[in-house]
Image 1 (cartoon, rainbow, N blue to C red):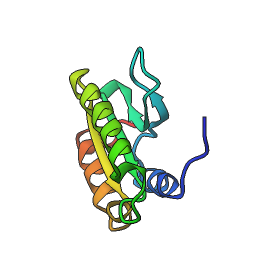
Image 2 (image 1 turned 180 degrees about the vertical axis):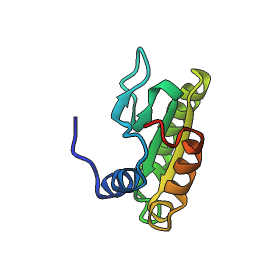
Image 3 (image 1 turned 30 degrees about the vertical axis):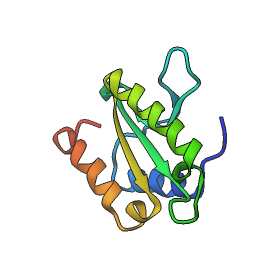
Image 4 (image 1 turned 60 degrees about the vertical axis):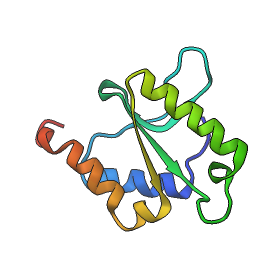
Length: 111
C-alpha cells in the first residue's frame, strides 16, 4: 500500500473531523484487474477517487491516463459501484465532505 497523497490526507482528515465512518483505503474492487479506489465504503459499494493534477496536465487529464480512468470507472459502474470523484478544489472548499456527510446523514448516531 502506498502513502496517501496530501489531497487524500486532507479528505481523510475531513471525514474524521465530521465523525463519518472511516473508509477503506486503496480498496481493490475488481476480481481480475489491479484497479483500486483511493477510498471505499464496500458495504455501500461507494468508491472515492481523489483526482490530483487537474490544472497541471496530470495523468488523469491526459490522453492515455484519462482513457484508462474511464475504463476503470465504467467497469466499476457495471459492477454496481457508485464512484465519486473529487478534485483538490472540491476538497478544499468543502463540496466533497458535504456530499459524503449527506450520504451518511440517515446513519448519524449509528457509528
